[in-house]
Image (cartoon, rainbow, N blue to C red):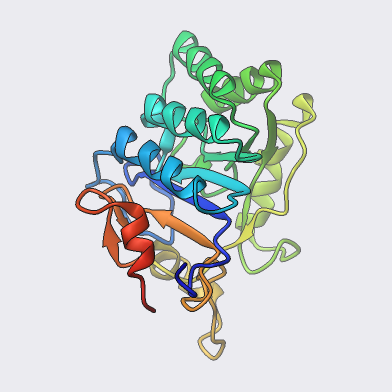
Length: 250
């Protein structure tokens, strides 16, 4: 077993970098030129191989907007369920269709796949370009399905900072009050990509910010697959995931 990956217990998939939002806080920058998604069959094969060799306790799918490709999300979470990964989560902005029938169909897919929890990204930034009504209907369907759901807002500077964006975020959150959905701590916006470009005035130039999502390269506990198959220092479209893990060096 590779000493740098011996504590691996989590798998993440960036299903796609395509997105329905154009958020000014996005750390990845502009998503308008992205398309395509991770290959579902190769992704599920990787899950099975990893679970045969590691005790994986959680799996998450996100994007971009992963529900632009719900069938891919379904296959990934269905496999995670079959492999007895106990925590299976999805991050979504909730906007992939305006068709209520399609929205309900997708939620039914998620329930059938075994998704345990959904983090719904709603805040001042998402709702600048994403309509609220289809997102609220998506949330209603999720609540009815029995899947655990929580709102996951992005806060600027801090959750308690009284800037215009945070004020608007609280108004957006209030739109979901009738559903009694819990609000998670969300995340504090990191100065990267669009956030640095459009919100630079809110960041202190003298402060050295650390990316909260960075892994310790000498103690990998979570591996994240990109839509193009990149993972660690390899690519699952060309090599078996166990070979990639075995050959990994920081």
